[in-house]
Length: 115
Image (cartoon, rainbow, N blue to C red; front, side):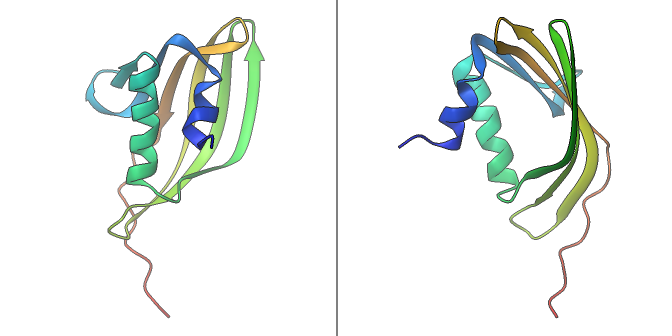
């Protein structure tokens, strides 16, 4: 059975790079190669099991593209994130060679209160 990660990876080149919006490096965290990029994507869903990117807007110019979105997700502790962001893509052929992610730096929102 194909997972969401299997499906995502079909869009990436074998030597793909995912630069996440958070991490210790100037680029956030750089994941290089299919296995590392897959692990980076899995970490996003482990951190935010209900991760969703809403209100997307996209454009492509030559071998570059941009996807703007609003990210919403809830951490296992119940705190929530709601931020605007974008991905800047570099394409090689019909695949993504680089996915560079940016998002606003906003403190987590408190867990929703019952009732």
